[in-house]
Each structure stands twice: as structure tokens, then as C-alpha cells.
Length: 304
Length: 273
Image (tube, rainbow over all chains, first blue to last red; front, side, top):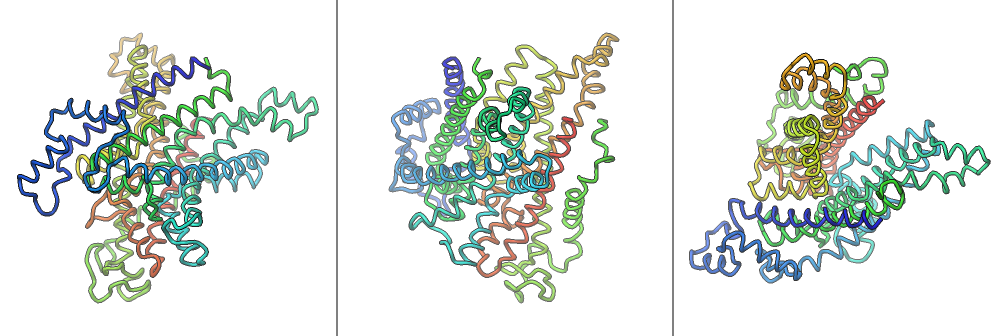
């Protein structure tokens, strides 16, 4: 297990560094900058701004400075939200995004496992086919369609929940559901496939032949191997939730990280976009890391 | 050609998604030619009219553009971008996978390491970064999407090539002195085609999803050109007074995504069986 942890760390850290440098270079290659507004700035103001933000230094120096500052948790000032540092914006947005993503993940896990295990218990029956078709439909529904649809039905139509904004926990209900649905669909498919395969194994048949109850077979022998494909999906699921959150925060006007990211991308706010991409990459790498550990715990053969 | 690619026995289950997809494609190609109003012309006498108005079968949007024409043209753009991006990913993925699988050894290991590392990247953000950097043009939308969506294709093709490499007919061709180029083009690629097409079908809905996602956020296809993502966005802004403006493009988008996913999954399962 320790070998697995070390090996994963050895690939995770260089990946993170590569993402940092690559995204920095990409942003800097960009034609047009944050000071190219509708009205050109006079040359002196422009020169002063360029110097303040250190945009005139050679690239390696800029990268070194940037990485050094990030190591101290300082992402610099935002170029567009003039009165805020990027760290301020991230500190404001991150808790909201994490709450949204975490709740959506739990909901998706509950719905997905429930549907997947039910389908596996009725393998080949009509309920199985119906649940799997539903799961495929959920994975094919983009969050930017389900989000507005949920608003249309439950907020504008029935008036049960707020349309947008975050005035109390009720404002989170629709965003969490919209975000969780596609992930729930994917988890349902994976857990059904995993359980169907596990139930066909020899040791499960033996356990059944020895008179263990169906529930006992399921919980003691089949569930753990069935969760392996679900565990390996945890990384992509985290990525899906983060990208989904970008849209959901825009649709529901939630002041999370994703909304700042979209604003930053539209405004070419380099420091803000870089900080968010770095953070997202770090989160996804972290989730992949945990997924690998979980994988190793569920399937001892993967520890090697 | 791989026999499992032929529609025949058991093809019935593929029929509904194929028919839906065919209808959507046909409507997107022919429909705009038959409508009195083009998708980007404003009808000042009919701003935000409801469906079933004279001249505008499904009404107009908030600035008086024909909604049916916009949806059909948007579908066309979305499908065109998706096809182009999927082809880019096919080209990169098959090339990368075939080279890695054929070369084997250290080259294979290094190339697959790179694929593994790229898998850990947040794709959507890489595409957004590309859009931010190179400006928002439709060419870059599909080049950028294609450039990040080839990883699974590369893995699948590599696996297939490694299996094929051991097969007697390839060994025989080698023993007969056929040059590697001829072996790859005449013997290897035709046998990879089946699997590649199945995964191409699964790549297209992903690409459609990314394109609409970007356009929805204002980072993809740009006005006056339109795509399903832009139309969903416009519809969502307007849904309190005109819900059909959201339901129409949203419905078409979901129908495309669902039929492509179902087709791709069935084809893939059939290949595996």
C-alpha cells in the first residue's frame, strides 16, 4: 500500500507542475491582454500597469516568481476585479463550490448506487432495462439544460424554490440536483456492471451453494468487488462535478469559483484564470489519488 | 470491414436512435432552405411572437429572429463542429495509438505515460484556456476539442494493434517481406477501423456536449453564428415568458446526445462480445 501511495505521489506532483507552467505559458502566448479595453489606455498609464504587474520581465523570471508566490498561497491581484486579490476571490468562491460539489457527490452516490444495485438484483428484467435506459438518459442530459428546466418547473412554475441566488440553504437544492444527475447516471451504470460481474464469480456461487442468504451474499461477497469500477470513476466524477459546477453556478447565479472562472476567461483575467485552473487541477489530482487508494483497498491485486 | 459493423441481425434495437438522428440531420440540412426567414434576419414586425404565428411556425426570439430557422441552423453548426472535432480526435488518437502499439517497448511506455498524465487534466479547462489564448473562433473550437478528446481512442487503438500484431496474417505479411508502411496501411488499419468507428460514435456526443457547454458560457461559437448551446442560453434567459425557446433547442440537443450515446454503446458492446 505504501508503494502505491509513493508511486502515485511521484506522478501527481510533476503533473501539477506541468499544468502550472503550461497554463501560464498558454495565457502569456495569448494575443490581446487585460488592458485592451474598448478605449485604449494612454501609453504612460499602460506602461505603469505593465510594470506594476511585472508583465515586462522575461518569461522564466515571471514563471519563477509566479510559482514562488503560489507556494505561499498568493495568487496576486485580479486584473479585472481591481480591489480584490485572486486569493480573496478564491477564498470567497471555494467554500460555495465545495459545498455544492460535495452535496452533489453524496446525492449522486446515493441515487447511483441505489439504482445500480437495484438493476443488478433484477438483471435481465424489465426494471433493469428501464433503470439503465434512465441512467443513459441522465448521462446524456447536459447540466446547462437540466438546470434551466428545473428552474422552469420548480421555481417559475410551481414556485416551491428560489429561481437563483443563495439566500439560505433552499437556494442550493436545485443546483445540487442538477449537478448530481449526470454523475448519478454514470455511477448507476458502473455499479450495475460491477455487481453483475461480481455475482457471476465462482466464490459467490460457492457462498450461495453453502446456503448464505441473498442479502448476505450481496453484502459480504459481491458488494466490495462491485465497487471497484465505481471507485475508479471517482476521479472523472470529481472533474465532471467541477466542470458542471461552472455551468450551474452561472445558471443559478451562485458566487462560487466557477463563476469567477467564466468571468475571468471572458475578461482575460490571467491571474484569476490561472489560479482557478491550478486549483481545479490540484483538486482533480487529489481526487484521483484518493480514488487510487480506495481502489487499492477494494482490490488487493492493484496494490502491487 | 469488421462483420459486427453490418446492420443485420439484432440491428432492430439500433433503429430508433438511428431514425431520430437521421431525421434531425435531414431537417438541419434541408429545413433552413424551405423557411421564409433566414436564421439571422430580424423581422421587425414580429418580435417575440408566440409559436404558430404567420411566417414563423415556432415564433421568434427576443429580437425577432425565426426560432425554427435558428434551431435548425444551430443544429447544423453543432453537428458540423462535433464531426470536425471528432475527426481531429480520430486522426490524433489512431495515429498515436497505432504508433505506440506497433513500436512497443520504451516508445510505447513513454507514449502511454503521456496519455495517462493527460487523463488527469481537467479537459474542459484546457479547452477554455485554449479559447482564451487563441481567441474565440469556430476553427479553434473544434481543433481545441479534438486536441483533448483523443485519449480514449489512442488507448483502444493501441490495445487493438498489440493484439493484431501477434496474429498470423500480420506475421505472414512480415515474413513475406512487406514493408512496415504497407503492413500498417493494408493489414492493420482496416482491422482497427471497426473499433475506431465505435469509439468515434462515443466521442461525438462528448464533443457535442463540450461545444454546447462552451457556447452556453459564451466561450465557443460566437454570434451572429449560432449553435444549440447559444440557443439554450438564449432560451434560458427568456424562459419565464417563452419556455418553448428553451425546450426546443434543449430537446434537440438531448435527442442528439441520447441517440449517439445509445448507438455508440450498442456498437461498442457488440464489438466486445
